[in-house]
Image 1: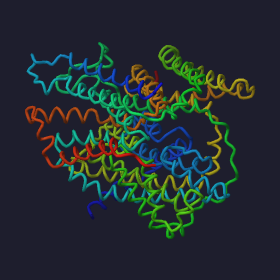
Image 2: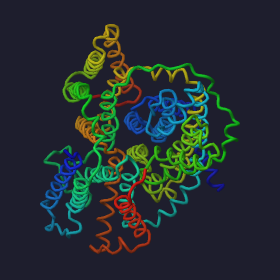
Image 3: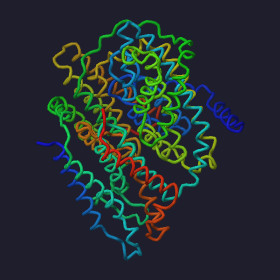
Image 4: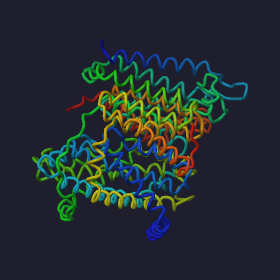
Length: 147
Length: 491
């Protein structure tokens, strides 16, 4: 399958959706707005440009060799996504920051260092150190509120 | 001339205290370390440091950011020379001759040349920053809404054209960035666009969390996907630069510094293009063409001078036109706005001292990289040995806290995550990030200028094409697009 054609089609859809949303957007004529000052004008024009570029991409002929690298590395990507999203969405703001950070860093290192025993043992040390340093650094030195 | 020197002297005196010097040296070190680690870029470093410096006085915060920026661009040469992996994209050209020299047992000498080139490049860029900013600032006073509209469009088009290897994808990324900037309340009627009833989205997408996501989280995902094996390094010889190299290659240094600076001024193009262009120009002019790619000192010097000269160059349009010359400069510009500094055409009238403050910050950064270039070889070699499994979660914690710190709301953390995932997907599909970032930064300028221009002309489009600067910028955009679409590219 031609990857450019698929991506081009996706951009055509994105552009068309933006144009449709901009076209149906309130033009605020009741507030005295003219067509050239309507809120949907600029996003609509940008949607049009994206749609035209999508058409150009879909119609061109080009080698797809660069996309072959897409096939590898999905296991580690999925693991990183789960760990990072679990920390940022699931833990931050719900658990105390120091605990969330300790758990995240420890779990991350443990998952990716498994089964190296010595490095696994070091994971909670890195977790604790990161948790303490980041908490102290942000709250005391940079005077930033933590989540 | 003398007024400029007096202002520069005043800026230097202002920073000449223990605390700013300590911040400058610390930030340069952070920059060098971030730059040296393959996968972590200058943009990511500046974005992360922006979130860390929110509560600092503006002059110190910007000093930290400028030093991080310069340090990161320099730091990239370490891994380019020692591992044949560019620490940042800006150092890709340095791999060719830097690594070849290292394989000949001259890794220390190569690092000394990289230090010399980087220092000379930054100094040349500093000269142009001090000299050319007032000139461009005066020219920018002629710019109105029509010109700024085309300038924003030109920035996205040229950035899409020159970053990455596929202009069409670059343009798509750039216009996507411009569109994302329109999310939230618009400036004239405060009408909410594409917010889907979300109160958080009504304020628009915060720039810094978006940049931290696109350059921080996305880069971490790429780094962990590639998972490079542990580094093995050979012993390093002396890293003390030989002053005779400066005399021997002074033409190359001046040429590369000038090329690097002026490529920096072009909106959104950046350091990697500056390095490659300087390298190509040095090769064309060299008497030792055959040595290029096989361990040419001149080639390494040209690449390193070019990319570091680009840093001050990229800041020139930030200060005068509010248009960033590179992706890290875009983050720096966002940081300036957060800290209440208003760059733009009026800067030489309202706050000329600030321009020379930035020049002084560059000087401190240069001193920083010179010190670290001479003293920290062993330390940086150790840094390169640190495993990514340990670095990545720590940096992700900083990305999360930094995004939250901007406005103390979790929504910004989600923005960071969203941009990280989208940025990762776009990178895998070979869409460059620099035009996307430039689009995000320039979106506001483009929209305001277009609508203001249309209101001024009562909907008449003619002034967009008939005013001299507007017509020139429009012509350039058409020329770039047509040249890419219809002129067959040669290898």
